[in-house]
Image (cartoon, rainbow, N blue to C red; front, side, top):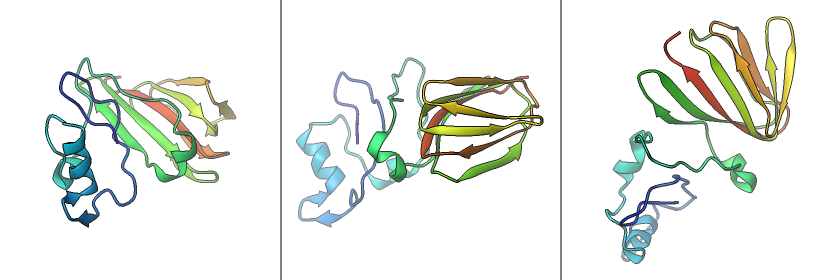
Length: 156
């Protein structure tokens, strides 16, 4: 888990199993916060709230690698005009066909995704990006364990 230290910017929030385990001296996260002299100790309450990026904040969107199977889809930020998510799908899992009013990009970070369109299925491999017009019906299925950045323009 990466947390802001004095004078630094948060990059990601990756929880690992046992992060809230209680032992003498507090939870694992509380002990790590004290050890690293973090600006503010982290509590379970802070982590339960959906935290979006702030303008100017750097986010870590590198491939998840060996941690991919333990991660879930998450919203990175949402503004008035734009939403960005990290989509995580394990092999064989899918999002059913749907539409959104705004334009979309799907940038495959790792693995392979099959994007089902009205008239074709497009395979996205790591490093490839697909643009879809607003109201384009699409579904996404993971051919292998995969993660992608999905950007949605909220104003059509």
